[in-house]
Image (cartoon, rainbow, N blue to C red; front, side, top):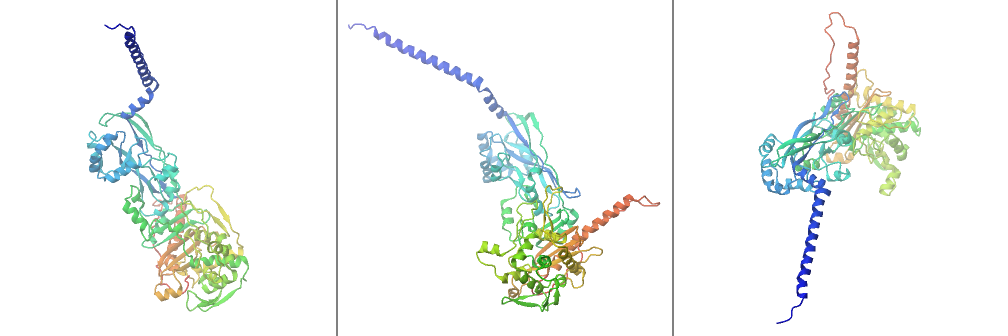
Length: 632
């Protein structure tokens, strides 16, 4: 037998000791882990548990209404339901998607796109999968509470544009917040939020949108609400009052039905916009609920550009309305004698090219007053040649052309007032003297917007005071520019514009108003040259009319354009301006009479107060247009 070794017993004992130490270490680790879970991280896991049974349902704040200057509602909101999809149970969500798609009539592509957009948002925040739920949709959600607990109904306030297309391009529309807007808002917006996208809805979005609330509820395993934990009420958006006069807007809209063009009516003293029309247009109610992609593409691809606000974005040749600037420059600069006159045979040659007057037979001997009243092109061709482009540009720019007016709407365009510096900077060539001849009658490179022409006409009539147009009643920090014009220039120009409407032979004589010093200037901008027009046999033009009243220190100024017309400006656009100015004074007279009736003591046998009804009517049907040359 071999000898026994004491070391043979020590080895198992050392192993047992090692196992004991490891066991003790594991027990200590487990105890530390339990202590960390139960004490240190108890709040964290309690929150996780709460989120499994507590739902946070947003309460959407209604946007503030828009009112006209007399407090009449133009835009408000109405209650509706949206359907929310809760995402706090990813496995249950994926399992129920086919049933949800089938029950609510949502395509798999659209639903997954909504989920993809919201994938970086917290899981406890629901996703709007159907902005406007029908009665059938609501019934489906209510009847499937047990098997589809991930669906929830959310009451929202949907935008309502009371008058449909009226003021659409000015008011704008709302829509779902874009990814870019969410990135720029530093977490202020969530997917599905509604924001202003265009017009006043966009310009004053911060005032209109309000602050959303929140409702936290406890639900059971099938999504049934057991109790409400807390409820933070939504704060509605603030109402905004506009400077728009509904009555003037209504008659302007009626006169522009089935036409392409724009109208701007403005308080000449304050810059308050009384009416603004752009045609063709759209119905902003189509945007109140998520607009279908096909409809959006149709609107954007429409050749008639219904989304373009022509009042502030259409950059067009002003035609003979530009002669207001030319006349002011001629008299104020004293570069041309006030007695200056020309003979108009109906055409003239400048720099080797023949230019035509709108009246083929000509005007005969013409001086400034007659040239304005009957819009003689030959006279202003000669004035333009004598003044030169830089002096014309000085007065045009000084009176606000080629510059944004600062109206409180997004995306206003500036137009263009050409000059020698401009053509050198942009085209790297010199200005040709022949180009000045076209600019002198509002053709060539010069382009304007309707709102610029309204502001310019009011500025000339007021001696060079250019007010900032605006649509918000009580607009703060409105700027006023002043381009000084001599009293003689103001007198001669406004007297000529008064003659346009009130003297026989004036291009706007058919627009005169009884007992109102209505002044104006017609203009017709050719869309192609005189020769090309005759060669192609087309007479389509843009017809302008700018009018104001009274002649001195005017109260109202209106600019209107009717595009693609065969009539000259006095016939196509003049009646629109006439009707607005007439309504303006009819309302003023009616208000004065009502105040007098209210203030006067009741007479024996009196039947009470007298009321009057103002109905927008179209007056003075357009006359047959004259043909040929640069029209007035």
